[in-house]
Length: 560
Ligand code: TEU
Ligand code: CA
Image (tube, rainbow, N blue to C red; front, side):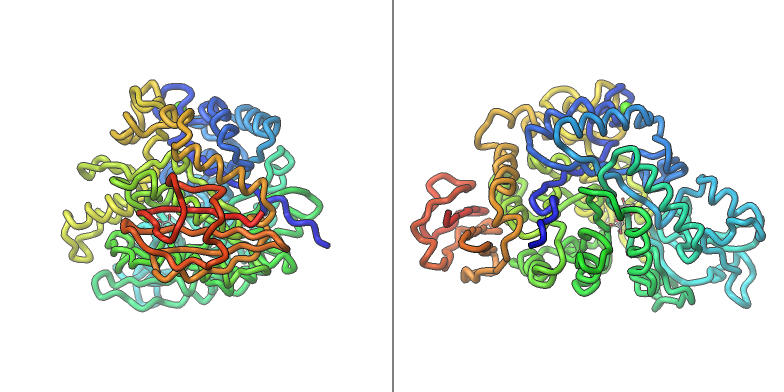
């Protein structure tokens, strides 16, 4: 019998440091701020902290543009601070997973500074340098080596005047893509990863790791008539050497080390690719973040939001449960620092705020996989309010707005789109108290605190047994207590209405039955007769029995 991996019963908590807690009153969250809030994490009961980047960075993309992988940015603290954080987490029985951003570096990283310095610099081939398109002069419109649209709007190529060549940047021009075809690049990344593991960290969350292998022939995309550029995703994601690179990394970095967690962020991943990546027999990654359910409400772009069809979320998540089944492993998440707030996006952040926050948590945490909580989700934080454009901070939103004219979009509509799906929704400061700046900082925060902190805050919830926080505590404890949650099989149960997400988990003789009404309506559920008279081990309404489900009602029934 194979011992199940430790992370099957673990819950991960994501800290986005800039917005978590400010230790020195400069308005930006930092490592000392995190150290001061470990009681909160311990009280919640999570096992692992995933920390978004704190490395040295010009902060063009809030730290996802790294200029020194082996140092801490002074805005966040020092290496001594991170050592203290590792030690404190470990002494409280929690682990630390760091972000690994190696599809690209900052353009201020010494590797890129060297690479751009001349055509024959030894590091020239560490990045993707190409001549202008044949027949075009450098700098001429259309001279970019491919016509791809970048994630942050505009072309994915930037001309370096001094050498007359273009470099590839799938994200911002300040984030040049590393060339993983070059074995020296891979060895340098592996060495850096070992250095962090030797320092005591417990794993990595790997940023856009499915983009590290690209089609080296760099084919053009189907152009969008409005911009002349197109979506090159098929050519730069899941390239021919992705699995080879991941297996090599496993051998070079992780083999011989115990109790780690590796999770690959993979926008656009299919169930087939996710299965290949997470099947333990193939020795690649422990789990991946898939993106299907966080794209269901996107229209032609993510800033052209569409209402979610009833049942769409449950259907998508069920598809992933079924596909990864007992061979692969799912990461379970509804939000992170790139997504709107869970309760605003998938729930009802008005009338049914508490009910929908807890119902969504129930259906997510009790699936098969490792749940991820994004900071503030455990108290039901909602989307920010952004009255005007200058309330936004995120490069993705600001660039999209700046280029919206190219697409002929009305600025007022674009602003509405940013309010719905902009990444800043998740980046407003964590609401600790009802007082000034929600207790996040004694200074002026880098982004405005959500005005609803006066009633929506951690302090107001700690001692309230009916709070969202208390409910998350119980859900986390349940995963620790019950093997069926960590290891049981998953089977969706048809409860008669697509808005009712019901499923059964089973392990040997142990059964768990989860039923959630993911709608604002009262619905009658067709529940299996065997569950009719069992009282719930967890519920988000009092007097939970019978077939009638109130709006966003959630019940967890157990046969043990
Ligand atoms: O995100 C990758 C990604 O594809 C997106 O979800 C991205 O946030 C964008 O919204 C696409 O529309 C990762 C990081 O999580 C993100 O914060 C970084 O900006 C990005 O990579 C580049 O490192
Ligand atoms: Ca600070």
